[in-house]
Length: 316
Ligand SMILES: [Zn+2]
Ligand SMILES: [Zn+2]
Image 1: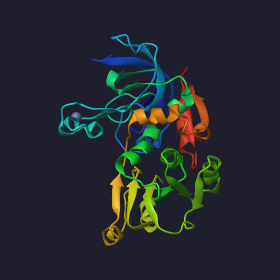
Image 2: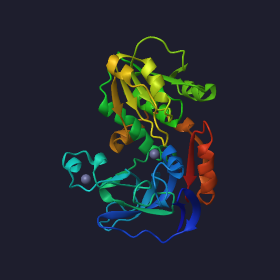
Image 3: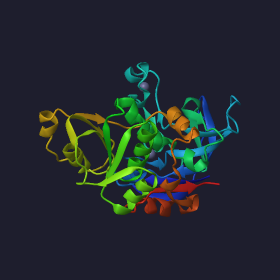
């Protein structure tokens, strides 16, 4: 089968053997995959990964040895947990000490014609959700994670810092959950997408007054500094950025102003799917381009462009 193979930070289209089903796994024919910043971060050296890249997808179960999932349209959560370690026994499977992550760590990803997944990682997609929406389940779930971690009151002022994809998705999720959201960013054109989605926006430096919660989605090490300047004393910063760059930052305001700093990563799939099923989030403006798998290398290049929205890879 065809796949986008990553080796030593380089990526190329390659012919690779079909994946072999492991115990309690299903074989999925990938329909549509999404390029995430993490994919390009891996190519930039964020993680030493050799294998098929990609972790955001929607596909059809081609074969399920137990039968019940065969033919179903599904998405899949990316962390494969051992089920036995300290965290797994406490239901914190995303922090499994022996975790494997699809397309990121020790396991082939989804930029391929087929992928295998453990049955427990697979979620059926209701018919009312389009492929273009379903492929965004994973980043949407990452936005959902914020609501799991921080108790946000309807009276709280919440700033989403960063007008990129992660910022927009987090803003859409938190607004759908009834919160008062303002997207704060640097780019007029990207902020206008947020405005088009009916979100309140402001340029960095123009936001005033106490901000109770800042969700930092800038993708840059400088975002935390801006977040510290925005948040009120006693407020909360949720840090979403993962980057290869190193932070050089004065942490004393966090101590002096008693700011709570929360790291936040992957989120739950089921509520993300439920949110899409109720059409509480409109994701149609997020996708910028769709490339066939054959042009996957170009697609990754496109996704690296400054200010690019979501780039998808169609595999049909
Ligand atoms: Zn992702
Ligand atoms: Zn574990």
